[in-house]
Length: 157
Picture (tube, helix red, strand yellow):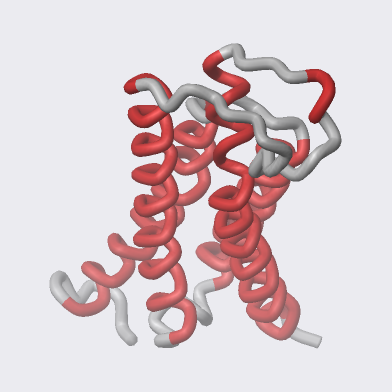
């Protein structure tokens, strides 16, 4: 079995897993925002993350700003995933083994850290580090390869 027979499915599965983890961040964003603002409620620690039991936390400007920043980080990650999926599903970078291996490693790390972000209720600022190091780097590699193929024409497609 050749290396591309292993790398291509692994790249697809790990990229999709990381994407699903990033989509799940949207469901738990309230908990991450409250963690950074220092709002602690030990009685509802195991309740639904949307706090449906009549808890009314004040919606301050800080909370709104934090929600907006978290939402912006998610939008940046979705755009980066669009570039990753364009390169992969378009077949432009699918058969470059080194790029596949890079994508696999970085998306695996991103998926693990995103899962920890969700599970342990990290502060919302940490998502920017996850997006910056795992999503933006992979998207930059994809964009550089697309430029090398179609604009500069130094890589034969």
